Length: 471
Image (tube, rainbow, N blue to C red; front, side, top):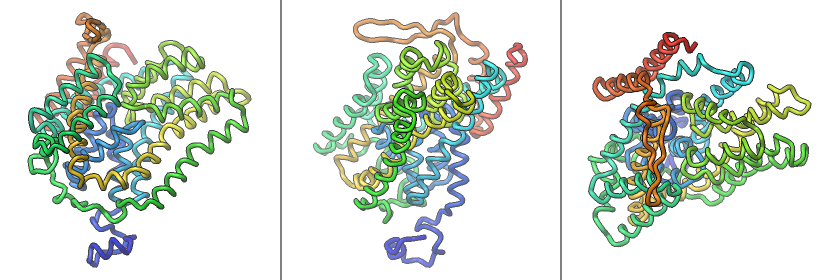
């Protein structure tokens, strides 16, 4: 239903069950389900999928608005791709849109990781699934590289923005600076440039012109701030309080009912902390999670974290979904009076709940205020600079992903305060290289759709597993 304010603004005779932009909610649900099913490859691949479907194919929101929302989500703890889905879903269909978009984005990964975790616990390997998804890594690598090129062409429109992207890449790839520092530094640099009125910042970052891709004014949503997206303080506080309760009350209940040392309580508390400090996505925190899960809590055996990461990398949904596997195995090994598989399932679900519920809190609380910043020149310049830095971030993820897909061994070289990861050439995976080449040709030469590329490469991976006796 349209609010009175929306009806007054539209001045139209649209059916009352359609919002001002005319996108039926049912269609949006189907599209978000499609986005979720195709969201492989970590945040870079997921953002690329979302951009192609929401901006380029459906033309629901414009390039500037997409990048503005992405910039905000990169500043938040937790998986930025899921938060971006919540933000866009909320923009299009208010609270219910954000809830559906964010939930559907997580659901395929939750089901897939849970199924693989059961197989892993019962049989000790997932060779069939690993063979099936072997080719998907090659397809995802091609999609991520395409995303870097596509977003780069639109965001790096002058030398200053190009330099910011390069600086972000170097800071992450060579100096391994904390992700929040890189993004904050770019934002401060852009803000200063905007305050000084420097044209490089005011025209950069993919803002404000036809060269930026789909203009906001030409999208279904348009360029005005929707009535529901203006900052009503009362609504923001109410929704924030609701999600804060949904997040913290179950933890308090576990603490009171089971005690602080029960595995369910430990899982809930530990991963709630992770939900607050996971700036920079999954890669930035997985090393710490692995260390704590293996050495401190004893939830995993050495090497099992890599198995879980392999599951998360080759299934749809946020990469941070690997934490569900950690919680699953932790409860599986300390089931108490429950059946081990029941305890494990509950442990995995608790992990997922406390990891992703805060994402809705951050978006519903802050997004109305972030939308109003689109008209502030200095803040827009800061976000444009962050967009440029994000290109470097995605490129860094693409390089990291390529190294670990194509090579079994990666050497670390340290010098002058830097740490460079280089592939060990003798460890190259020839089959992965061949599949990657096929995927690159399919994406860049023949412009095949994502479903075709992903499906074709998955079948090739399955054929490779059968041919090498891996099944």
